[in-house]
Image (cartoon, rainbow, N blue to C red; front, top):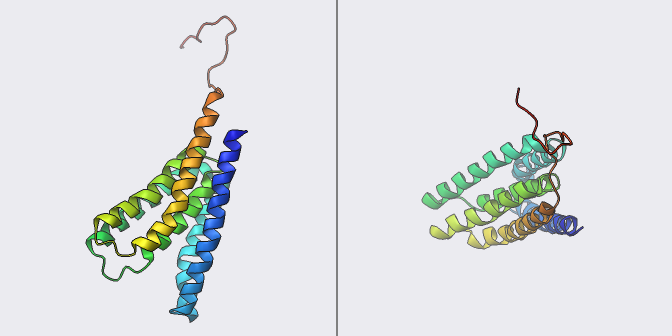
Length: 182
């Protein structure tokens, strides 16, 4: 019961955070640069977010390695932007926001893994950015807070489920002996 509450509290936090940040990002994008360029920029993060979220919902086993690879790419981008911050704009914050939203969906099926990934996505880009010149640190901090809190809630949820025995591949022989190897 507690595990379910923690998981759904974290997911609700991420949904609210995603809605608020998404509305803000879309509004800012259509204000400047506006027009078709804005539509393309919004689609550049909204379509991958939708695809990753659908993958996480329908095929969580496939989504885990994909999310790990994309998280690694985000860390690489964070390092690159620290080395060469010229012209980065809000790109790092938007990538963090979109990836965290998709990982939150994964958390409904793979809570522990998603909790770790959300902590990485929330902490590492901000930490790397802070080591550099700190360009865009405010927007990155704003989008990193919800993934960190949700990651903690997901990990607490996963650990509170730990009291239940996991299903075993071993068959019970009834005599207390382990099955013999062939």
